[in-house]
Length: 484
Image (cartoon, rainbow, N blue to C red):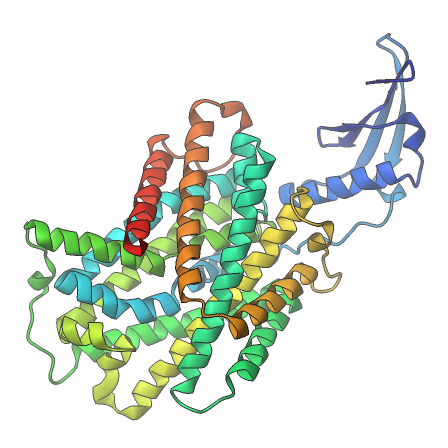
């Protein structure tokens, strides 16, 4: 690049690729340009786990092939800004992934799905898991190729190179996370209100601020709490399964009753229930926002994402089968807490325990949404799609604490101010739109613009993301038809 008749120096961040061409008069030991480049290299290093050795600045001399070089140690620039801490291993990530899905959705939806699909509710959950799997596979490949906390926003930037599209997707995901967390905070208070009288607004504020504090404290603490509650949920669902099958007044039904007939009406009910059950799987997409905090992310993330979805699907099928084999589907559909019906013969203590786990499920899901929203904001800020302060990392906690605080405060405001039922339904539609766009982006890159697709350790046949895009678009259309 020429400036005033001279060629400007080209800056390399060894062992990274060419980073920038900067004005000659801005380069010195403590120059903002050098510091800025070092920060950029630090962020890239946090993703690639490659060591930044030095900064090489080449000064071309005129139009010749000769030049002068200045080598600056990375330590010559300003101290490194703290980066996210890689502290999550494979199995912890698998349990975290299950914790993002196994939550208030299944606890509340299992009865409604049984009401629509009847004895074929397990099949409906299986089909819903298959619908989710298409998008999960796309996210798995993209997380292996582009391991970035920005998630969908970063993927769409790579696919289409359109800043407005990436920024819009990122802000939509942040919005859905905050609104979902607010909805779950309200659900938590409603569950709690079944046992004791509590001041509504004050309790919402206390619960939400507590979750925000945990999210800002440290990623291992937040993930540890999510995993701990997830283990409790899995144990509870196992107990519900055993209790349901052992109910003294359970109707005598054979497993063959779970098989569907071939008539059209039956399959319309099953497919409608499957679209409803799909929302019990939403949450797997939040896993990719932990990419910069996972060990060996290019290998661990795709495997953990797919495995957690498969395990969750199997769990839903087994529990729903036990419920419909033991309890009339009409009773399940009418029950406010369907899982409690399966343990009612064990007494009030068992029913109360299910209520407590329902509260923990809502709390767990809300915490996941706050963690996710803060990390999407962090990733977007690093790409210039959001204000820079959202990328602020605590030196001790190594979490995006500014984004976490802001997300928590917005959750509080929404939860105490609005009826969020309609808005929560709208956010589900937005997520389906993002899924469709991400799948289409991967399909596009694999076919027409392969040079933009970085190397990864997980690759799909090209038709898979196309099916994922079509499935997500179909689910969105069904949702819109239901609303309007």
